Length: 346
Image: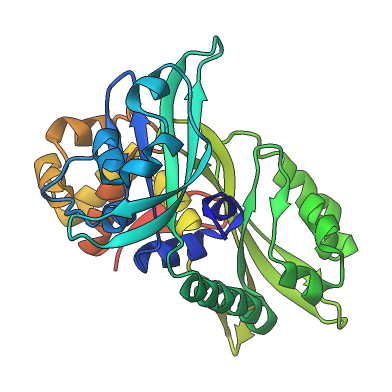
């Protein structure tokens, strides 16, 4: 496994290996000069994020001198010359050596002008331990849908779905057919109406939520809730949708929701769906001023004002920080059946 393989991994797995100190990512935007490193990337390099500012030069300085030629220098990057994949030795400030697999991606304008450089690094020093974590993640995903029928999924910009293989095993259709036409899992009498409603959601800012009965391979019919939430990157580019699918199980006179699987991509998409008026409503429930929210989230007052005026990019990191601060204070953002978001206190 190397850094390029991470592009096909689930967000949960990416989160797991980053938390274990195996992976990290960075981005350098040329126009503004802004550089951002994930916590995992600081960890990989053996640096303290509170004492060191992200800098591509600093990363290169920690690479073994004999291996630096495998990565593009700052001047080469600005001219559009980047080495997409490289295996390098890293020497941490403590003197510890690590082997890193590095994947670098250059983003350019329509006329070929370099705009930004982003990358991901994977620590491949201990491949055996990494393989063990991979195996645990596969077993977790397999057990999740085979036992609870709950899963997360992704939808690309061209509306191709990405379900785990266990969904095909449970429903009896091929994975290729399900990914291209997930409506085949729905019982025939509901299929057309549900498909028409789902296909009408063209606005990438709209959250979709619906329920449908699906037939399993063993002949049983279960009622599922399906949620699809738009996902954006920090530059405001629409990436598709993050989804959640879980059964609604009757329990006496009540309906019990299966515990939803944890998924970093889905959580990020749900936080991005929170708009300015949701933030104002949440502040009102807490009795907070904009200044209070700014202090709680570590944002500037002007940034909070831009968020509440919907003047920030949909995928801006500041939105996530504001939402997380409000959640920590007891606010809940709840997706209703029609896709709208309600604000409540816990």
